[in-house]
Length: 115
Length: 111
Image 1 (tube, rainbow over the protein chains, first blue to last red):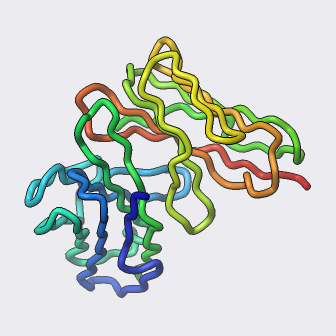
Image 2: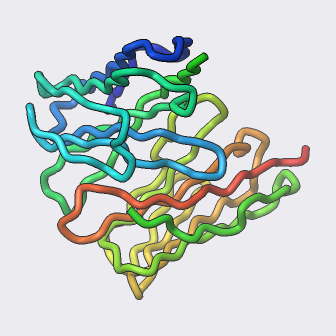
Image 3: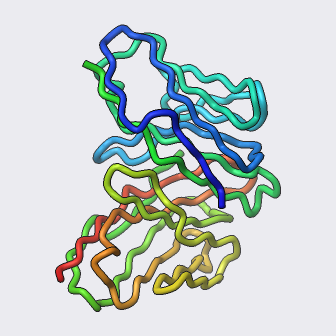
């Protein structure tokens, strides 16, 4: 079974703090993704990575950065947390090849609250 | 990515009933995925479809990849209380890593 784990299930931070969300997958997947999920807005892609040290912006990258130093680990960084970044953050991974049958598997999510 | 048109938005169903929901897109997709999300958890993959016209089952769940490549539906037969949750569709176009998602269908089962 594909296993995607996220470092925290719940996190409370203060405005202005630097926040790290970690995601690890154990299936040697090429692609990894970070989403945020908000009521009424669905899942929105923040960043994704298709290889180590490679990244691409998703639909809402502002206020976020990412790091992928190792294939199995993809980190989401909030440089200076703001209250509008309070959300559920979901990490996903996919094998990437062949693209025609690529499927994304999600982690359990991190509920971040910024006070 | 675009947001897919998923309907219905929510449904209350009687235990034992069959349930149907669908998803449409303005673009052609080569993959349709259906996920279920329980409160406070991440989405769990239910069914993956890779071929137009494909009909795939997973227990009491059946999903189909529409012939036009612009739609998909999910059926749940003989619903039970643990079917409660939010069901999402997702689709991916050719040569695209990214998924587009529906807004979700919230299913509540009346015992």
